[in-house]
Image (tube, rainbow, N blue to C red; front, side):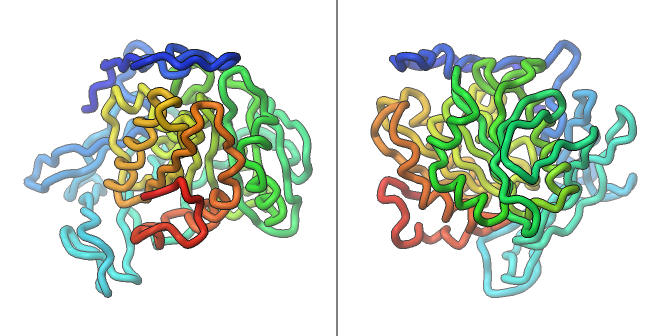
Length: 377
């Protein structure tokens, strides 16, 4: 099992004026509550007892890893290695190449009854198809079809909505330390208006509930993804979004939350992290990207003046690329408070191209012409 007891100390402080210094923006990892040895939804690779190489195990809602999902009894199926790069054709095998019309084998979320979750058989996911097993509302839903401020599970969120009539993208935004939901306009720029024009929905959260374990510096928490789940369920119920186009974004502490979204929810298509990227939690746990987490990442940082976010962005990009996803790194070289809006055109192109399970990315061989000059693979 992964070691969740390690802590990561910040290297070098940032002088950020109104924003917190490095000790606030990049703290050590917060351990799970006593008696819990993993975070719900966490996936690990495990050894199979019957001679197979590896299987997968998922953490249930009680904080306990379930038995290794291997071939044999209990309706458990073998973990299928995605094999080599995309080939000219043929189905994917345990070590072969995946054809242009092939499929990827990923574990679905656990089926839960009460407090008990059991791993389910592997399922076939067609590249580019909408995710299955999406969240459903747990309470009466607010109207997400018009602009304004709504309450979701007792949390306030500002929404910009394209309204009913066409199913567009859903873009979540988490703001930086001490900031407000309106920060989404500054960071996203024309991404926001493009999403709304496409009939989509942009949701920017006001604040965390502050309970459980933090993803970064006690600004956002793992529990906050439950609010995102509720928004997904309500938006689907109201016919407002395309489930293959669910994205995350955020700045600084919110950028950490957006990056961690890749690891926490399999329905995420892609994320943009502005000076956030990998967190102490991910680094301390040496966490791997699960086979069902297919999201691409566009990781924007401000160079050496952005403290540890520079190295963190490149580290997360390496993790994404190693997992068969796509990691794009952009360096505006303007420190932590650099102009984030300059990436709006390329950011919208990135989101629009990288829908759910776009693997391999059409950009694997290089970024498209006209993409922002500070970005690279």
